[in-house]
Image (cartoon, rainbow, N blue to C red; front, side, top):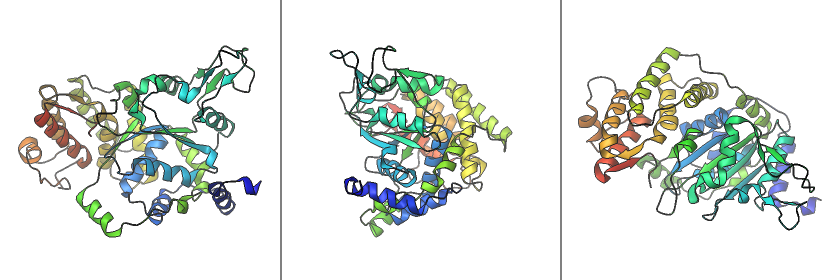
Length: 392
């Protein structure tokens, strides 16, 4: 049996022997192991990524091509999974027009047989159901090469209803595939996204169900990378977080709302709701609930993050992604939203949007992540007559 195992599987086995004792989840360990493997991510980005997974098991990673979206997802699953079979990294095809690449189909020539997809998604889901205390991951790479709603509709539906996905009429198939498939809470779905002329935009109903994290690289980050660039050692991550995997699931099952600074948080959310409502991009009860849970999970992972930082992350990941439209429609909204991100006597258009060298770390900026994104969208609307959260 040992001879039949792949090198990666044997590496996993070796790491599990070392990390068999379960301990509390500590995000610092993952951050340190990423640095040891040669991966360059800010601490804040990793915190956002993990807290988003803990809030809801569906996140979208978007932004600059080659900025490490897939690598971060790959690094995390290799770090925390007990076995290689606990995750799948699946490239989405441009020809995916239905659910068959993910969920298979009944065999018309042999009615007693259900054809499972080569992607292995059904096996992954069944395994996740059999091991509810361990995390399993489905990574959909280039998720928007095809229209997401065409192949992913069943998953979007059961995320909210907790129902099962029907595969075939009960009693007609006898080859080990159940007639209905339950997508368990310990299955985490990560979609990576690039935006260009070959891809499709996400609909509001997809964005509404996910935390969207944008990857950007600034001058200092690129300078640091070029100064220390070396080959990645992904093997250094294998199984290093296995002894935290059960506690990770326990944390993800915590659906509590934040109780700290609720009045301040509620006031800000209402301000944004009223303004977003003007362009038809207001959020519903689901988004409000998930924002409060996200803030709570951020506090769980790092209780030193300030309330304004947590609000900033929530605005960036849950409220701004649905914004898109013409300059005439968006510009007034973006001006108002930008003003919400400032304190003091700064004028949002004159002092921020119109200045290419504005310092977003200025102490008069309440929400730097969100303000920088709003400024980019505003400039895009002015230059192109249209803007959206997703950028090429």
